[in-house]
Image 1 (cartoon, rainbow, N blue to C red):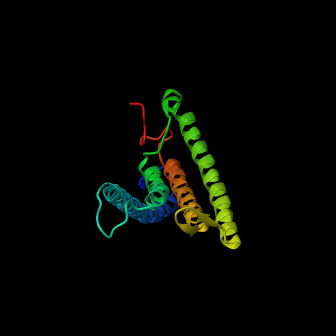
Image 2: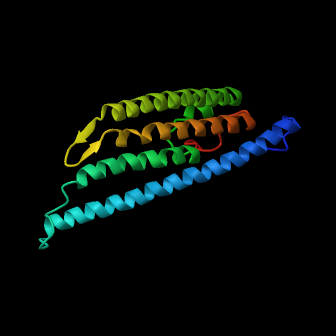
Image 3: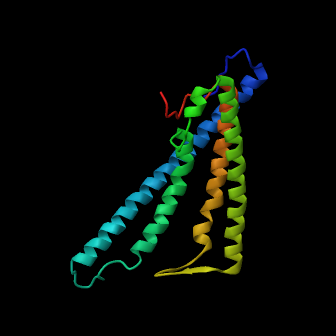
Length: 194
């Protein structure tokens, strides 16, 4: 939530902050939905693994001895879980963060370094989104396939990558806006030092 009553900002800036708050809130709900989708995928993966182990160890007439495709599908599901929850984890401040130096230096310098780190992360997310989109498109255009137990188009696995990095980039923009409107010091959220 951005501060609205701060004397540091003009009425038009506070009105803009209200719009950003609404967009950020809607975006947060989208990310929560993706995190829930990650939970559903995790549950489905668990069911597949349990079924595979049960079928390998219990001879059931008319059923195969295990699911030949379960390892391959589980690998893809782990990847999708990571992609679904990464933007939500960033928003919640649950990403990996080393902030011991930020707590030891002057607050204004720490604020600047927070801003610089977020700006660099934004640039990285945009680069990964761009190259991920190129890789997915190239795979689609060439008709490349993954041949394991299942034969699937390669772009199916590549397509979510640029979308998730765009979501991560959007969250970095929201983080920069929140940091701009916050006190000049290191973030109070997502700290590892007390």
